[in-house]
Each structure stands twice: as structure tokens, then as C-alpha cells.
Image (cartoon, rainbow, N blue to C red; front, top):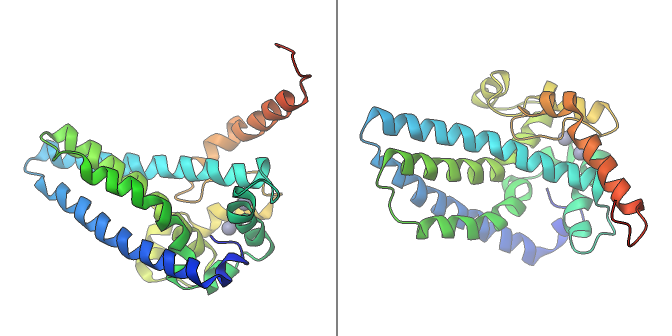
Length: 227
Ligand SMILES: [Zn+2]
Ligand SMILES: [Zn+2]
């Protein structure tokens, strides 16, 4: 989710286009290694790894969303104009991300995934069911985190392909109703936008408000105070 000003910088679009292409190649190359599954336990490990990776991506991207909404602001060095501004733009105009093409929606998440996927390629071929599960987990985290902007855009889109609507209804990806909680309020809850699985628990426990209070307290503490 690029801030409005960055979408007008043409070299950034080229860079993100290249990253998207590299992402597709690297995901396919790493994903092909999962085809070494040759037993039911190995298959179970791969499915479990992918599911856990999908869940962890929801938590990680939700935490990043919370940081951008509530902790950092647009004046924060580097991250402010590059990342935080995009979330502010989205709150002002939630449907803007549904008007962009694949590149506009997914380009900026593809870029940081490339080093992680390259590192994954350097890992030796998994020699056990657990190894395959670990590879599936890593691919699940990266793949789902990269796809989060797309899931988020679909949750705002007036219409989506039938398969996407099915996945939304079965809560495999973020549903419009689950995400409406974020936009209906003061943008102070339901930060997770990959699947939204973590939102009920995090909101019920008040995890992010507690963290905000802790951050505020530590910022207000006089210099030199130990507690
Ligand atoms: Zn949204
Ligand atoms: Zn937000």
C-alpha cells in the first residue's frame, strides 16, 4: 500500500514491477521443493506449516499496521513518508486501493520479500517431514504477508471473483465484515488484515492499547529514572 505521492514516481513502479516478477519466480522455485512430499506425515507437516505461516503473517502484518496507525506518524524518518503515509491515505480513501492494478496494490510488499526468499533458496533441501514443514511455514509467512495488501483490497472491493468470495466467507482470508470493524471505529482495533484471525483475541485482551500505554509511560519517564 504505497502512499499517494510514491505511486507517481515512475522508477519505483519499475522497481516494484521487477520485484513482483522476481517474487513469482522465487515463490515457484521454493514452492516446487514442497513437491518432495512422499508420505502422509510429510503432507500433514506441509499443510500444518502453511496454515501456521498464514496465521503468523496475520499477526506480523497486523502488528505493523498497528505501529503505522498508532505509534509512528508521517514525520517519522524514512518509514513515515514511505509506509505510515500509505495507511493514512487508506483511512482517508479506503476504496483507492481497489482502483489500483496488481502492481499498485502488491508492488511494495513484493520488494522486501525478495531477500527472504533468496535466503530460503540457500537452505539445503529438506531431508525430513519436519524439514518440509519448516519450509512450508517460511513460505506461508512470506507468501501470506506479501498477499496481505491484496486480501485487504478485496475486503474493500464492491465485487470480487467467486473463489475470493468463498475464501472470505470461510475466513481463509480477510472478510469485508471483519475488516469493517477497523474502519467503523477510530482505527483503534482489528488491525490484522491478512485473515483477521487474531483480531478478536487481541482486541478482547486489549493487547495493543496496553502496549500503547506502556510506550507512552516509557516516553514520559524522566531521563535517568530506573523505574
Ligand atoms: Zn482497510
Ligand atoms: Zn488502519
